[in-house]
Length: 226
Image (cartoon, rainbow, N blue to C red):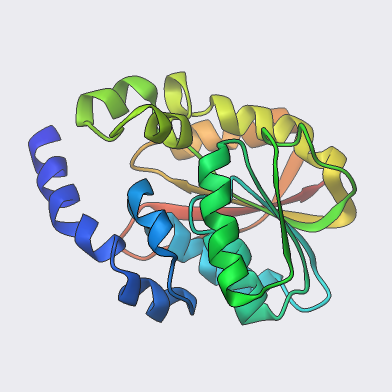
């Protein structure tokens, strides 16, 4: 399995690291500065893209948690849905700086600021997106998925892959409007459906919808208050 996964990663990484393919999928070219942070998107990002089209419009107050090195979901939300009230956060400063540069080059009205999940968040939002880190640390080490310490910090979900998601869901309801939605993206190759369902139940939120990618194991869970 490890050997096959490594071959797959080797073959698919150039596709996910292509600026032109990214522009086709998300409507803009990532900045050159972001190239040092690895691939621009993964399969879960594509499902999140579909969820944004369905759940975000020009009147949405959108928070993108863990926005990543190209601010992909925040910028796509602004470009595709004409969403004009967007906050995007990350807890790795150089990753955040890279995302801000992508947005600034397009002159978009997105506010970028540092936050470890909700630690520096104020206010309540209509939609909160989170393409979560869900890779089990031990599995990631075994498969060689973490190129460096920053990569591990960005993509490791801790032991079992669900520790960061559990922290996120525990606090998320405090930052949702009464009719707000959470769009939580995961890949079930790395974290099981039963694990995600257990985390949702423990959070006190309820499942409103789920969007899946055909032939892949990526899903977006749309959650709301009970």
